[in-house]
Length: 216
Image 1 (cartoon, one colour):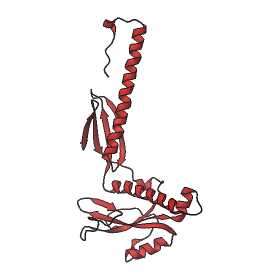
Image 2 (cartoon, rainbow, N blue to C red):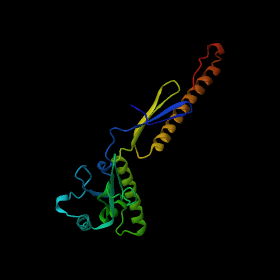
Image 3 (tube, helix red, strand yellow):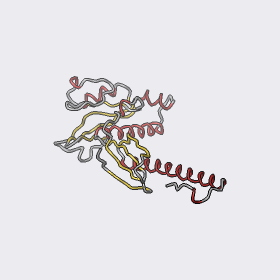
Image 4 (cartoon, one colour):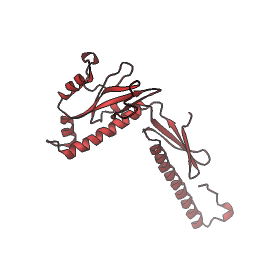
């Protein structure tokens, strides 16, 4: 598998790869937000099971969604050019007249917020928290849609397999930092093992010529 990024850290090698089989975050069953998206060429979430054939414009879709007692709703835009990207923003390139346009809505239902936060009334503070969660969920899904999901492999100085992990959505740096943490733990374990060995041979008064060298 071809690495898209490589970094040497404390004598060890980290390689970052595209995750070729990432999980769809909208199927995890943990999302607070709801999504309704229509596109003739792509399969997108449709949490209300609406039919695109029933609508002639997005205002009609919005009106039907609002019947569900919505706390907050936002348009979803898509840019389709040498790959696809989605956004909650209308900024360029998501307002491009040729390759971009609206594909749906993301929204929060009042009943879901009240259940998730255990409240009977949605305050501004609670709604703000829910919106932050919605934005994070959208960023994760947007990374999935655009193929920006990564994994890493970490090898020791002599090619030893230290660790590998997949499913980092949207952030190569997060994968690298996680790999560094695993390398630190691996090296610390080797140092601790070396220290235990040295204490043992010293207590046993093993002559220097019989002490085994241990690489760290």
